[in-house]
Image (cartoon, rainbow, N blue to C red; front, side):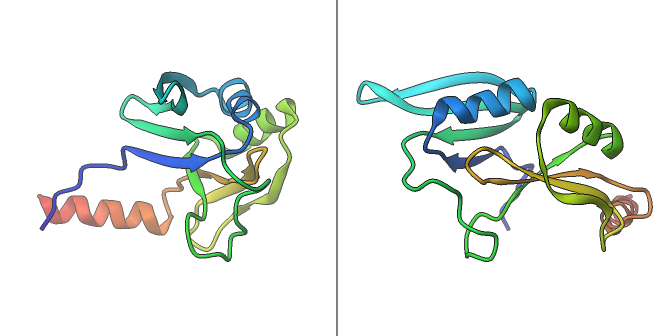
Length: 145
């Protein structure tokens, strides 16, 4: 069996690289880690989420919006936040519209949803102590002992 330690990056293709970088860097607070050129032009940009997790952005996408959520393929990026209500206040202050309200979801985590300027869906989630994920993590930890 293959041993996986984490998700290293998620990649998206975008049409307007400058508009997307402005959103992720100047609004969500990611930092640019590096750029790679290929054949003399920009091929991809890495944005830091954590020291070992990145959002990889490829320019020159076709179309104006990401595929709708029902389409087979990448559905959304989920970013953990320590306090959903503080995150919502920060989104409001930045003028970032939420596409779904803040709710305690079926899994008992707090969540709200936004989109980047090209329609890539982003879930912001605060994990709750009574959530199914938290309970599963605790169960797995106890099984490893």
